[in-house]
Amino acid sequence: MDIVDISSAKPGDEVFVIYRNPHVPTVANIRPAEIVAHPKDPNSLALFLNETFHVIEDDDALFPTSESAQQAFEGHFFDFGDE
Image (cartoon, rainbow, N blue to C red; front, side, top):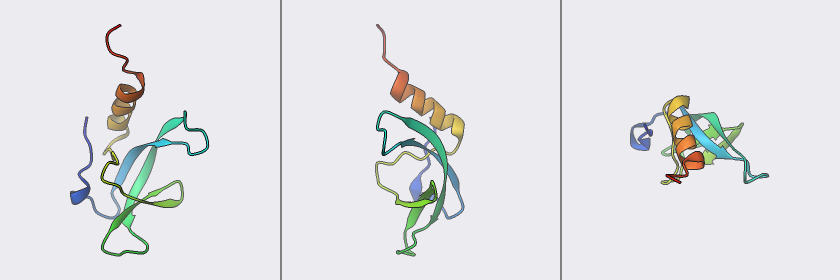
């Protein structure tokens, strides 16, 4: 599974994230997003997702392709191990 190294990311890069719906916490989707210059701190980057700027946190997982995000999504939400 590929994850984007944020230290090498630059404005204009398209990434994919697993986004939990803040109104329905049990719902998560893979969404495209864009790396952009932080609107209040030009020395930082932000994520533009759903028409909103999001601060990129250290524990955010950003994926280079929708396929990578889908693989992580399935592994996280549907891998119940051996039963």
